[in-house]
Image 1 (cartoon, one colour):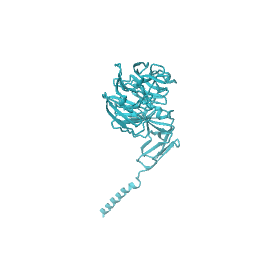
Image 2 (cartoon, one colour):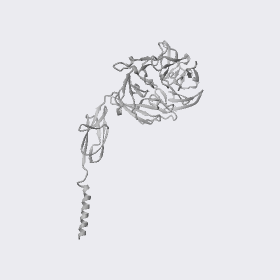
Image 3 (cartoon, helix red, strand yellow):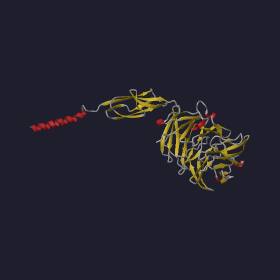
Image 4 (spheres, rainbow, N blue to C red):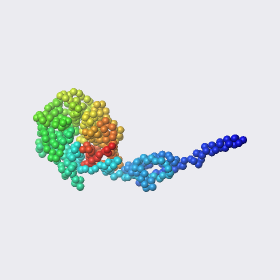
Length: 458
């Protein structure tokens, strides 16, 4: 009988122990609430009733015209991330704080700052590797842009306009000459090469390709005169006779109405590489003043490539050249190639990619468009000799734009993103923004204001 009572007592005790979790030992439940400040500045989600010890994530999303600032509890900041994850220990009353956007270039993520450097009438175009001089468009002339060189070391921003400091226009003989789009910086950053025209009234009477030191004073080092039968204009875009630099910076290639030319500065006469008759779609001699389509040179790894746009067919032709055309590649471009002043064709990373300033980057070998997995429009890009590419994307945000500067390596693997806000520019985001590499930083120009920035070292 005693054994039976003992067994019953044990069973009763076990039953009571098993019943404990269902009664007095159940986890406590807590209320997680969240509100928005200021009212209507955004939305929050993730509120509710949760058990103690449970992990909870609340999320704050700004309304148009606002950006998320922080999560606060009892007036104390608890997180600066829009998604705040925590372990429930008791009731919480959280506040999602938002700031109204003022649309100005501001400090970027992780403490990276955009430092204002200068003001110019239009925009930057190119910088130099040593970081002292920049080239900027300062006006629009009769037929093409006018450029000036500026010395960043001699400029003080104290309420003075950059245009009034250390400026020197690109030199050329004659008062009515106008430099064309775009001057090209030499590989070592020490020189500029550009085309200039001479006018007799409104008639084009002559011209030359000039090479100058990239600095102040900007003195002409070399001059390659062009006869009247060689002169040409840009076709629909002011590409003109944009030179391509040889790697040693002591020779250039350029296209005239007569054909593709090569000029070594130690020699007296330029050499014709390919006649105009073999450059169909690039040189158009059926006009009063012959014209040249937008084009680019790639001179690297003992190869010479010439790429140019055939606007009528909406294709890009890539020619491999030596003493004659060795190979011709046709790239069908699905996106319409824009015929605007702000477009430009350029080789990137020693010919691995072709880029159009309109925001289109193509793999040269396959002809496929590079997909950056971003719905925002590509506004500009820049690359440097350290195998870094920065792509600037932007999209409407409130009364201005949200700008993202994405840095990629030569295989287009994304390294880092830097973001800021910008007001709507006078010309619109597609025309009023530009970036260029400059020393160990990058320069960003928007609506005539220039900022320097640098990605955080990792």
